[in-house]
Amino acid sequence: MKNFVGGYYDRRIFEGEEFIGKTPFGKDINTYSFEEVLRLPFVEIFLNYIIEQYEEDGEKWEDATEEEKAQAIISFVESDEIAGLLYFETEEEAEKYKQEVIKEIEEIEEMSVFDCLEQDGEGGFREVYVYKEIW
Image 1 (cartoon, rainbow, N blue to C red):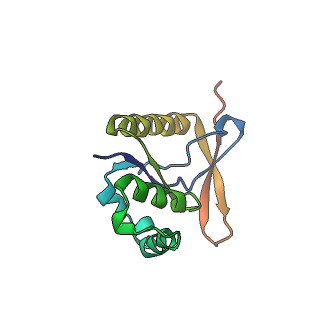
Image 2 (cartoon, one colour):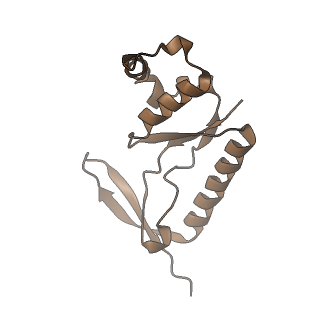
């Protein structure tokens, strides 16, 4: 069952009120099973820490249900500035959300145009897009 949706956030910057509320996810958004989530680089790196935090609360990781583990992982990933995950009750809901995000990204790309490169605080450059005027 692939009830997780997520991936890396879009590194591009979309400036303007037309883009307020844009999904944070990039084109690599995907659906994942629990086992696949555990192998995602942005989860795998911190998995031991997540387990330790869970067990500090007096719980045993191996006794937790898959949903309890999922919630522990998601609550940790919520503070990640690079990637994220969402959990859905059904695989159909997860797939529907993913398709909606992909459609949203395509629509935003159609209504925007590259403006410039902007250096971020880490020294990397990010593409900046602005609303494309429709004449």
